[in-house]
Image 1 (cartoon, rainbow, N blue to C red):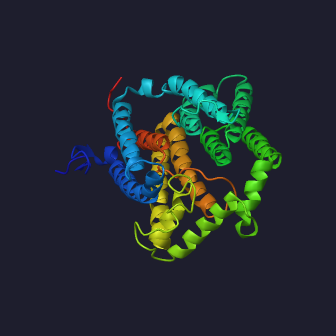
Image 2 (cartoon, rainbow, N blue to C red; image 1 turned 180 degrees about the vertical axis):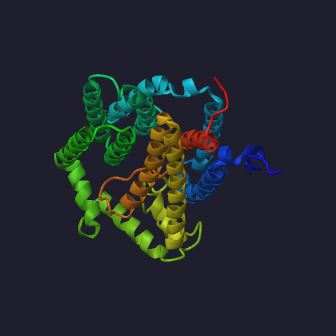
Image 3 (cartoon, rainbow, N blue to C red; image 1 turned 90 degrees about the horizontal axis):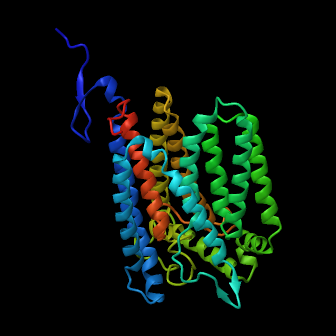
Length: 390
């Protein structure tokens, strides 16, 4: 007599589940492998791009690599805590994260102010408040949007989201993070769309944010100079133009197969910020088109797994997982693409750190934490239920 349902096991936990429960259970393991590959490759390329900068700054050649590994270990510990944290506490992490991230963003603003040629808070650790605000904003919207959709006067709440997003975008631009403003706008648009905000509200959200971005960009001589210097780097004699032309030369000299890992020439003091914002120039020079294609394929596999996770969560009515899975995954992929495009001068603006690859310890920490949260969501949706942890 045949059993009512067949049994199988998840290749990560080696635990028996019915086929209905097992639906998509390979996603957590596949996602884990994708993140592991990106992390390992990223550490190798970050060290290759940063060791000369470390030496020139008076540190040991592995200074940036050690910083990334340290932040990575802290992120793994934090990720394990978030994985086993009761669901109701995980959903409310933004209560603590959002005020702290705003404080970091304000500190970034203050640090840009010069008084008598000395930067205020010059000794404060370089923690990017823009990354922190996006992380906490995603968690906040994922928690709040499903709870206000059926309430009266929700339009007022949507207007509040619009006003806060404009303030955050403005603060990011004043901190010289134009690319982060674009990333924040794109990420919030994904979160609001997945949260089923009304089409007219999303339209006005996009309209006002794009208008603010254009106004701030056109009203700033610094942004305009950077724009034209990076748009036409061979026609200007400015540091931005030299940086952009060297990035383009590094990418072009990489060709199809690259010069080999560790063999980049332009990382030897010719590109300012190559260990962080313009790390893609070093990657392209050393691994060529093949390395670029490898990164893009893994990023889209990363995104595909997250979209599947969000799709499953919609079937069970879990809006928190749906919104946060889409938002975190698109944010990481958008950020990587923006970093690559800015290094290639396709986006003629200052660069942005590249997830998994840039030697930016704090951003690296947040990327790993976001991946840990996504792994938990895939672990939940792969079986259609969550083990009791509350």
